[in-house]
Length: 249
Image (cartoon, rainbow, N blue to C red; front, side, top):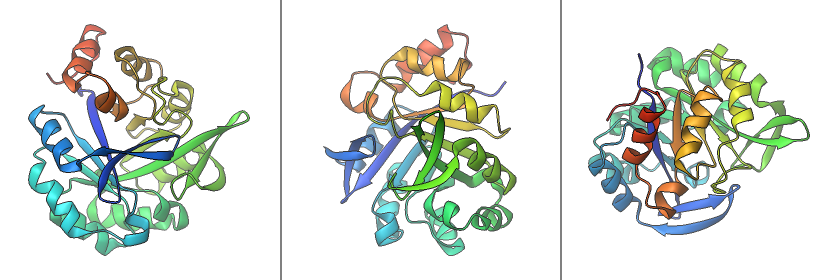
């Protein structure tokens, strides 16, 4: 049986580690390199590293090399990936997967090209969704641009075009520590067969089991709970194991 992954997510802006609330109010919380070293020492399953300035500045190899030199776990890098060459460069630097968001929605065939060249196993499509009425609508450009389509519709298309995994973030729950949007996650996991990483809202140990067991997520990503509480990835795994969820300890 596949083990459930617990994945710290690091978000970078202005070369500092930041944390947002509902994709706004980006608070400087310190050094991204220090955070990478901490999680590396804690032997986490994977790490996600997202550069919020990437769409404006493009990928910055020197920045990513700083991270990969300190990171000895599977690593997904996102932010500013616009071309096939960008993906090749990021993988060459040491990433195991790339997360694409804005470029995927602007040119969906980019997913097909990337998965054909590099393999779907390293192409993660990042979907940011917000509840509007009774629908979960997708937003791009850091949650600023509405696509006019639902998370279910876009997740299905991403899978059909070759995405190997979906990173699903609730904009409404981002940074609130009020729990994952289990309904959003459940809607998407029921619509696709590829793994879905739930992101946005984790605030206590029970939130993780809830989104995995009720929402059907394959993995959980979190940020605020690691920055603002004493909870560690091991604490989460121990609670998941107690709930009968297979994890690597």
